[in-house]
Image (cartoon, rainbow, N blue to C red; front, side, top):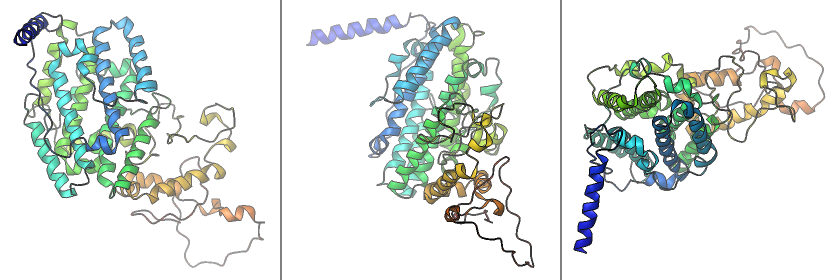
Length: 472
């Protein structure tokens, strides 16, 4: 046994020595210290209670890893075909049947891991923070107050690793969008980029239903709604993908208000994902320099003293980037429209299993159909109105709407119906009565909120009153 152990150590030493000369390491070897989870009985609770969401993150890890490996190893002429193949595998196979266990990413991205091990460590360490926060929110044995304190302790634990932690200070968006290699990946590969941004949307969006749900049932309902929104993004790619990088303060405002340091860390992490994709995709950066450029960027994102912005500026970035619609919509509201496309003819995304009304066998775009066939007719809008009312009956969704002035405005415009268009459901089957002249009123009736352009709204059942909303 002693001799066998000696042989194993010798082989291991030879293997380690050989890695120093592998192409792409540039004669350097990264230190590979790794640190485990902050200890606690809450760990892995999210996987136990919400496996359909937790296992998706294993697929996301694979998607990031295979993307970097293909960008690094495939020549430019082969890259489009290679990424299209991986995209199809992800969206038609792996995401539908995500791995039960975490991915050993260095197996998926061996060349990239050798090139930029420190980048892999920084991503792994930040993803671990994501998962521990999900676990804390999912553990019903921990009170809300204790959850907040525990999340701050876990964030301190994360930041204690100065060698691999992203700074908790917001970094300038110019680092992602205005360097000489910036935006190359999203320009050349918009569909794959949209898929990555949808990953990031879900990673921060899931915090909202876990916070806002008052019971386990409400949390489960909210998580399912957020997952449904994610799946709707994958329909008709890339039209429903986020058009701008999802910002945590926008997609998860409740979480951001409670834990701004963690929210900033996640935005910095997601910016770095984009930066590395651009560096690997940029033909202007020779392969021999990609490691140096990546490591310079990593150092930048560990430094909270330069190229930073204030918390107020960071929170206001959303409007400059197109608002919540451009970032994929609110996590707990299925029907918030995405940002309009250039031709403004794209349909509003719908939950899985729902489609816009159209004649059987007719595949024409929505805007090319006759007026009588569109869902904004009285008959077509009745189900939509009922759906809005059912959604608002859910306390989690209702609370989210009440906290978002933009969503309140959209719902007010969609649900307030001019008196001239009202047709009570029971009246549709009754013979029309002779018109009776109404008595004169001392004061004119309040003018109702104008409907959305080009849409006539049917009457529906009265919805419960909401802050800032008045019904005619």
